[in-house]
Length: 233
Image (tube, rainbow, N blue to C red):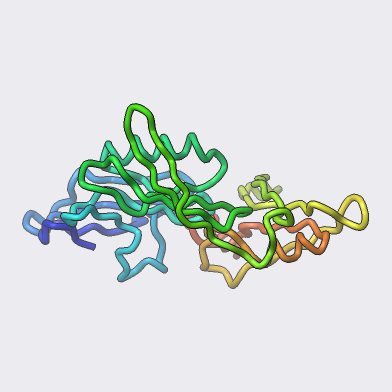
């Protein structure tokens, strides 16, 4: 994608790397700029983002201020210091959930944020940043299940005997007819799709029937680098 400067192209690449990073190319000099957003074990972008600049976050003047991070952790990598500080405040308020800043005013004092997680369909908040920060809920997403029947989800990780690091989520039912509850392993779509850090209605529905539900980011899943993707072979 491009920001307000049409001579700077932002692109994702995993050339000579295991994971995708975000970089910028100055079309006038044909040289890369100093921008390099990288993380070990996590793709900053993926092939499903091709020809789509939605992972790039621009301000009202169309200047690049951040990047949405895909995958099971989600979140935003902010280049704008003020938005980065606001993100830190929201993360402290909503530890264990994802707080995604959607919009803000020019002074960076009022922001609109969506807070969600594997066990929370999401709520929209207005966050006022100041000496005494204020938080006001304005919209609550609903689900077919009442709040008292939603089950908690926790992450887990382990290394296989072949040295592949696997991650996933386990959701335990609030009530089960037997103890321990029977386990359902939910297989996601075909390899090449990235897991998303969002509320999963299917998982919650199965847990409401008394099952523990595990989802695994199996070998071949996208978003964790070429080594993890190719380990399925």
